Length: 319
Length: 300
Image 1 (tube, chains in turn yellow, cyan):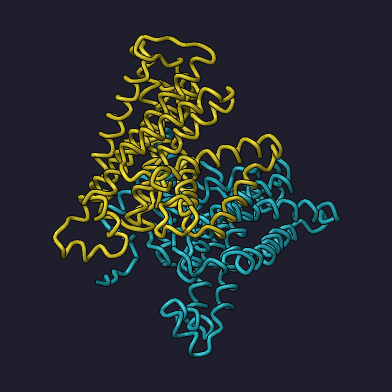
Image 2 (tube, rainbow over the protein chains, first blue to last red; image 1 turned 135 degrees about the horizontal axis):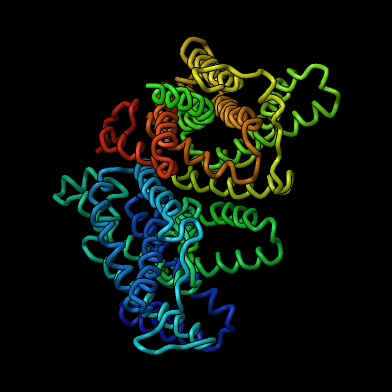
């Protein structure tokens, strides 16, 4: 039974997850579908933070790629006149990938708080630049027209549903890729960097290369997350790159822990639900509720919510 | 040439209060090993407390002796430190010391979220203005421009605070004990140092410095809920430039950031927001651990 709930093979798990998500999608009311789409797209960015966290690095500037993805797709929509979600995602991947290829190797020499602060400063530089650039709408940002899907122009609920389906497909595929990467030699080296990077060097692997590669994988996840968020909201502004946005992704990554990938997306959904409801019931103190929620999670689940979801080692342990 | 002088003076004024705030941050990091993300909120709370204290002072008939409002500001900041210091350190942070570094940062991020809303609940969202202390001391003529004397008062306070903290740490017995705790927590405990108390007091002083920075800026700006969010990032930049945990570093970092910002305000206003991060990024490229950080041996 546990074998069925936690399939050992990644493709099988992905296929299963996709089917479940799609079936759930048809039953969701509109607001919940939007919430899930947003949660999943933010989960993508947090997945990037989690990738880096496995190596003991905390990126406090993942909003950089979230913002780049959203702006790239927004600009493409307004300049090229096409808002095909596949093209937008491709552009988001390319844009964030290029930026990450430039900065990844540079950042890979930094650790701990310096890594966090440098990533943060990069995202704040983008924030500062975007806020002052009137061509790109300054602090008001840009509107993004509704996405199309390979020539299909849905409206109303169909639009929300299509975007939700697209998001599900993206997170399942990327989640699968990341899981495969985690289980590969590279992924295991990344995990070992956390414990002792000098030993890794002595064993013949390049810590810098591993970190740079992980950084690029994380950046691309952030870019895609930005594209989807931008398309779902229909608007993008420099706040995407502000440090509090990035802080939220770190929050989410810690909340879910680095043990399980589905946990990142489930954690994201939980966070969005907490946020929406506290927004609704305590409109003036929703930040406070989030803060208290965060403290409780840290206190009660030292390894993140993911520890609850990760594969049970002993069969007698209840899943 | 004249422009250069303006940039220097403006940079010095801006750097002065930034130094006070950053000093608190670097002190807490150096001794407790916590990067306090809520530091900006404590700054904002200090500003609010000072604004309320000054308001109350004048409401209670302080007009007769307006200079007393300065004391009111400092008392406001002390009040914040006395309440929030022990509350946060003793009530919350203490329970997480055995956890990962990053988790502690996240805990302070949680505190930041909570305090941001707590401020709105206590003081509301409408900006507060207390400009009386700002204009009390008159103006200083500086070339064709006038500077408010209060600005220079902030510089004096910053220098005094910096020297004071440095003196206590390096030249007194209590300071030596604190340095011993930084050097080896366990060993100092064995030697009979009450480490818990050192932490509590240091954290409270850190809170006080943040609040004092806020209190000093309160008369210069309109006190609104969002002021802390930006300050924390500035203070981070200052502390990182100087090297975490270093007082001299914080002073140099604050000067760097202050002058860089003043230069961009005068020369290229569009760049004001990001020039600070640019300076920080450049410093880190050449000095990966900040300007005043000693290199440490890595454990194999």
